[in-house]
Amino acid sequence: MKVHVLDLNFFASESIASFLIETTDGPILIETGPDTTYRNITASLKAFGYAPKDVRGVFVSHIHLDHAGAAWHFADEGATIYVHANGARHMADPSKLFASAKQIYKDDMDRLWGQLKPIPQDRIHPTGDGERITIGGVTVQAVATPGHASHHNVYLVDGMMFTGDVGGIRIKDGPIFAPTPPPDINVEVWQESLRKMRALRPDALYLTHFGVFNDAGDHLRLLEDMLLQWTSWIGDRLKQGRPDEAIVKEFEDYFKGIIEKTTRDKGLFERYELADPAYMNAPGLIRYWRKFRSA
Ligand SMILES: [Zn+2]
Image (cartoon, rainbow, N blue to C red; front, side, top):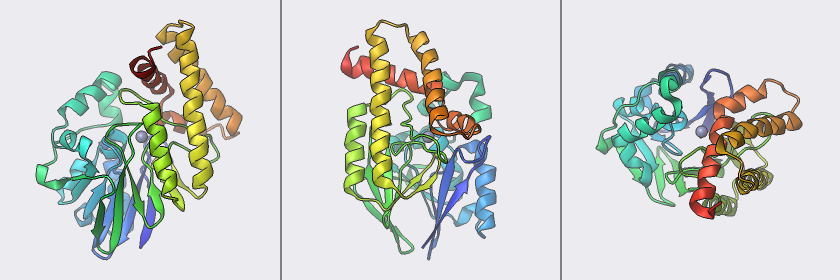
């Protein structure tokens, strides 16, 4: 079995990945990236000798557009789309998903994410927690891991764990961030998912943002630390009665400051912003505090 990291070149390199696994029955993909990089993913497939119609199965970690926005293309070409049961109906009817993304991205929707089309019900396979799916001799285990989103899975293939967003963002020698956009963030549920992931003792983590890391234990610990650090940073300011807009603005400097302290690579800030915009993280955590901790 061979696994290839496909860099989807989303405005900058190494911000969004898809993973190609070759099986005896054709390739499978984990993550598709958005519609706007569909041309790039097809070019990458071609470099390995495949056309989109060869793709047998597509596993998406969750339904956010940077992870699953191009899944409908592969369904059109005949692939089965594997997705957490809570996300399945939004793949069949993406109108709500599209509307909620449109609220955030407004006129930038087309440029960033492109189109979303409904996927026929019979091309969607809603996964159960722990379910194992075997394609061409390769077994993929779906592990329900909410916290970032209620419809989030990680996938385990032979000790390799494909972590979507719940496993954090880490680019080169930059920091490990927990992406916390609205509307679904639940810190305690996320921590529970991290415990579940640790208990599976992965040999390596395959991060959609970005790439392969072999220090799974340390990575997951540092990710949890950062998640808790951000959570209390937001909570402290809410308790001081700071207005939301001020917190969001201040968070951008805090976010940038952590990156600058961790790496000397000046180019990384832009890639972190593409993978996990600072202005999205604070509102997600503010919402979490109001909903669950009554700040
Ligand atoms: Zn993401």
